[in-house]
Length: 248
Ligand SMILES: Nc1ncnc2c1ncn2[C@@H]1O[C@H](COP(=O)(O)OP(=O)(O)OP(=O)(O)O)[C@@H](O)[C@H]1O
Image (cartoon, rainbow, N blue to C red):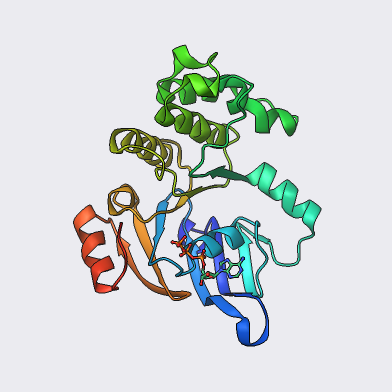
């Protein structure tokens, strides 16, 4: 089986309704999409097009109203709360716009916290590689408030990378960063894909951020509206303009 027919995550006829009756909002309407292993995919689209909803359903944070969601071979639809919690803990990494570091423990303790809670230890070689790549070797003992925003987000990326999850879902990971810090975080995500085959799925409004991805999946009005392979900032801006979308 090739990686093409064995995606890391997949939505099949995924439909998500919020509310009921006349007031119901169809946030996703029979969406079919695959996220290939070892690939960096950006999800883009106008405000309200369903990006966050798609990501939340893929990551087991929100329940589908119809269709199926798979993480590898595992069908998430129908899993109970406990199984979903374990799946998120053991197989998914998250990076959010807000860095979500615990303020009273050091950068290193923050990086290791999810693994400690799961009773796991990181492979020392892998930990050393991530820390080196992070460029924060001399900041590991610092508390989050002693770090810049970019440094805090790099700690959050390391925290997601250390357990080697099946997929890292990143929701506007550079939304709170200046362009220099944003480029560092995006470079780190891209390197994790290129160098160790991590799978990353990122929601973004930013064409520059999307240009770090291998592929852009475009959403409009709860539907897949297209794809861009090997995106550049210009090709993303042009395609978003054609979609009539807000791109900043
Ligand atoms: N909890 C909710 N209850 C009701 N409607 C919701 C809820 N969450 C999202 N929606 C609606 O579902 C649609 C898709 O929302 P979603 O947040 O997925 O879009 P998005 O593309 O991520 O938007 P943005 O770029 O503004 O973050 C929107 O019409 C939104 O108003």
